[in-house]
Length: 193
Image 1 (tube, rainbow, N blue to C red):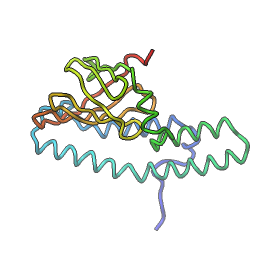
Image 2 (tube, rainbow, N blue to C red):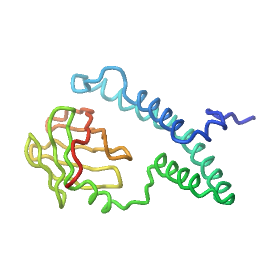
Image 3 (cartoon, rainbow, N blue to C red):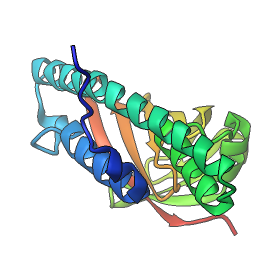
């Protein structure tokens, strides 16, 4: 049986433009039609979760092949002495794989003292030592891995925030105290001083 790539090999040479397109495409797929999950009944939320899991499983083999091809390209570029190209390819591998080489503690330190806009409306701040403040009151947060934070508000609302690699945007999957599930967005307002 012949193996067929889902992207043309020559596109790998274009670098992050291809990855941006793939990520933008899969990101668009990951957000099913209808942006307000808070109004969906439980059965629809289960279907939505299943939909997202199916997409993740479908995209994973493409992502793995892309990373594998980039690693081979990195080897040949390094052997050819093209340092700038090799560094760019290495950064691309890290961005796509989500492996920045950064520890959870290092990421937490980068996140401390940043201010964000929660759902493009309300300010939220990540303080030192896992303390945070927002319009809804104080919350605690902990980094479970680089770019992924779990949080809990005093009212019982809790969830996971997954940050983009450039630390400019994030996606929030929240469960409210009454069990309602929501997906929200967050964008950076200000880096720490």
